[in-house]
Length: 119
Image (cartoon, rainbow, N blue to C red; front, side, top):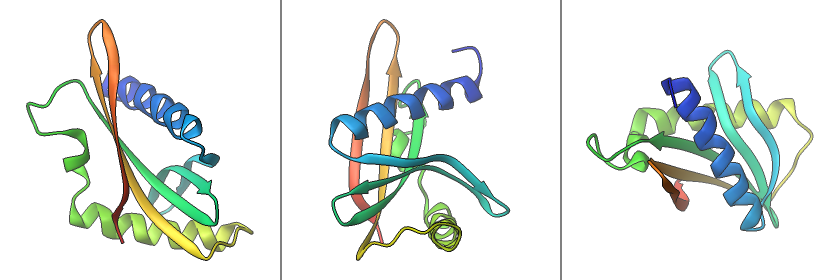
């Protein structure tokens, strides 16, 4: 992984595959609007899942999921509202998940999926 951007793209691919394997249906990836970007929007049963993906090479700065701070959570809530306004998707339940991807040299990545990480 030569750059941080490459690492993030790699982590999002791993996360999307992980979520799909877990039974979620990915509806959108890297959706952008003026306020920012949603990494993954998925559906699981009756729930719409807005998923933030954080990827790191190590834990020297903490586990990847720790990077989703309270200000980031607030921004993700706004982005979810914008996504809902722009799409014809309805669901009785909305959920915010965080997927942490720890990329390790010459070993499979470790994926941590926090369902309902915040509300």
